[in-house]
Length: 242
Ligand SMILES: [Zn+2]
Ligand SMILES: [Zn+2]
Image 1: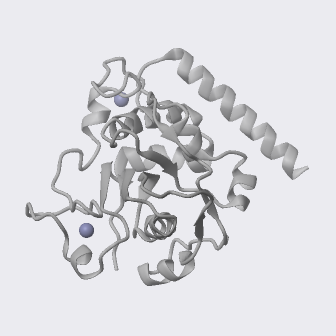
Image 2: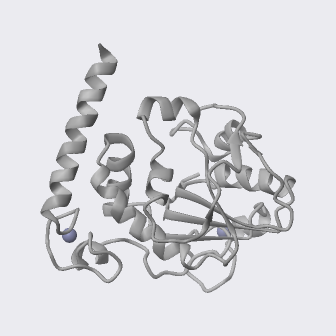
């Protein structure tokens, strides 16, 4: 019975999303004045995104107030990847759209998020292997789809996507209320490469960067498989309060 109700809710949401897409205009406010980045977001909504053009640490993409290359955290605790690029901050309109898409099946936001990812992926080194962070099996079962992969399939990129190059070998849920150290322990050893990545440039892709623990563990698995370099691309960079 629960499954039927969930399925009915999903179908209703899907129908509503298709109707909104058919009407066209900005997926946030319905206005028809497009931004340069996407026909699905008006200029006002685009300009409201926070941290579009700001100084960031080249490794973890946290905001900086100076033009130093690295933040203090990345100097003291080096990460297993070389760089991170974030489209904007994880707050306001972008946070709302990601949450609505992932947790409330608002699929109308997927093409827009794909447009934002397209901008990021165009800057990825040519010939690099693009690997999305794998989702937990239980999460895929409860959501009924893999949000990140569903977005990436809609990007306008002719790249080398390898969604199966990493697998999750344990499935502990990351608690939202956990401290950064707890999250690091919970995700430790969570990933393994399924193929040889020798001499390969890797681009790890995720929707949100919070503590960096997940991307760091995924990067370690890529390193163990021989990856030459590892770059991270994320839609949104969250602020993590320690
Ligand atoms: Zn708008
Ligand atoms: Zn940093």
